[in-house]
Amino acid sequence: MSRVCVISPFTGLAGDMLLAALVDAGAPLDAIRAAVADTGLTGWDLTVTQVLTHGLTGSRAVVSVTDDATSRTAGDLIAMAGRVRDRQVANTAVAALQAIAEVEGRLHGEDPDRVHLHELGGHDTLVDIVGVAAALHALDVRTVHCEALPIGAGSVRTAHGVLPCPAPATSALLEGARVVGTSLSGETVTPTAAALLRAIGADYGPPPEMRMAATGYGVGTRTLPDRPNVAVVRLGDREPADVRDLVVLETNLDDVTGEVLGYVVAHLLDSGALDSWTIPATMKKGRPAHVLHALATPETADDIERRMLAETGSLGVRRTSVRRTALPRTTDTVHVHGLPVRRKHGPHHGKPEYDDAVTVARQTGLPLRTVLAIAAESPEEH
Image (tube, rainbow, N blue to C red; front, side, top):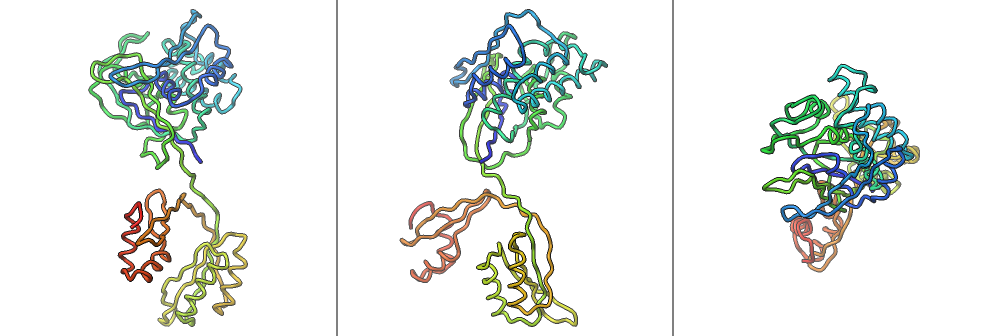
């Protein structure tokens, strides 16, 4: 199984909102605190509290600070994040902080490691970034999808003065992200959130089909008059696609009858071929023919080839190496007039098993197409 995280930035996204949403969805707070403690950061405490806002209960992450160091250089934060013992968590946190450092350095014409972070140099940034990385790791999230980020208008006050929204650093970090305008004013996406999305390789396309596992709501500090200020995460599981290197065997046949071809295809499937099929062809001198194919694993290809040659009398077989992606599939059984029909379901389509439908048609006298239609549409016995 592969764990998927889908982020829905309902009113925007900040590092603390994402962290709170992941905790609300089940990320263990102790593991997050332990990862932050690895950095050597002192004078902090992280709590997550339940908040009711506009009829919705969610979690809010609060960082309490007793240390008076309010800003650090990017190099300081990167070095601290690199101390986290779990290398996957450390690598994600370092990547996010390096993204911030590179953007801030480019904007201010400074060396990225030496650029002095003001609002981003405090405890909150390190706790949020390391905390999110640790939460995703603890939840065993493999892929992250993010819906379009709402971008507010207006301005934001920074150490450099009043700047347009989104702030220049945020705009640079969001390059390649999918965004949408919103009626909300002010900063709706923070540089920390944008850097985290970049570091974890968030995909902005449609999320995959998945089985829902948990939902978490992260509440921001800003209070809105008409809606909850939340970011939502949805966790789900999906079966990974099976990608394998296989072999296609094929031979041209212009002197084999249709009856023999039908037998050979069935015989190859019974002998271990993953698939077998024929394609009509026209050979030299206008002779009608068929191309017989078989799909096999590298381990069974030799045996399948010998059977193709023996059954058809062909003088040669061609081989092609291919890579096949097989999507996960499940099966269930429905009943049509009391008789079982198995159905195969993939991520995008499902259909009844042909042989079962034929058995039902023969025993009931129903047309085969009717049996197939009933079985395809029905969740229960007919």
